Image (tube, rainbow, N blue to C red; front, side, top):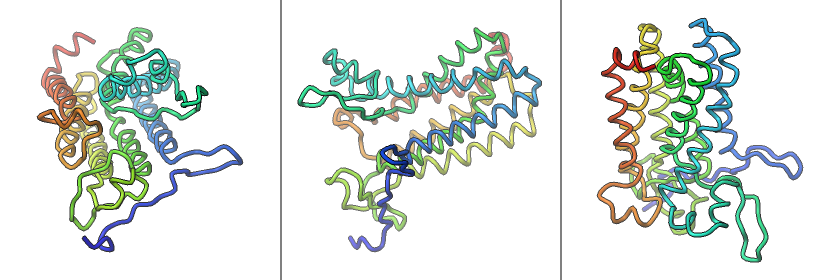
Length: 283
């Protein structure tokens, strides 16, 4: 293959340095995604005349739910053999540190976050928030779901800047050569699966926002929550066909782990979209 025909992707993973302190693009993308969701949901709460004091703790619940869920999801879904094999590895599962060969501990950040786990963690966190605030559960879920695709888009852009979750070898003209990927993967043009997801999630946000502007009364029925799950995880299921497997055991599965975990979320999403009246009674 002629590598000059493709996009050579070799970004600096650090966005900003202040002396010895640095901010990586991945972290910055996460923060931008969460900030945009914060602004969008705050606007929705204001339109729905929900008290400010009920909105204030929402960001903390969402942040912790996503982070804890995404971390545990990666460790338990993709690398349970490693993280459950010893007390040291269990510590690494919860704290952003790694024990080195010489016995010392090194701060590494959370290397490994899974979107399915993040979604599940967010759902649990929102349920706890609902119990604390006594708002309608489906109103809370629908409001968050309207903003979620924006955050998902920026998280995938962060993966792109990290040259992780890369695609299979291809000869399409928009293929990326991920120079910063591990050496065995860094020389051939590959599908930019992260970019595919970022683009469709960005589109899904405008789809949800358009429907909300036309049918705001659907907030509180579970429709937007179901729509978000259905769109995002259906797209995820099909885009997974362009990606390489993240861990070796996936090679023995009929579908990869991302696809298997997406199926129940799609089913839940469809049920939520179809069951507005009875779901309103639950929440």
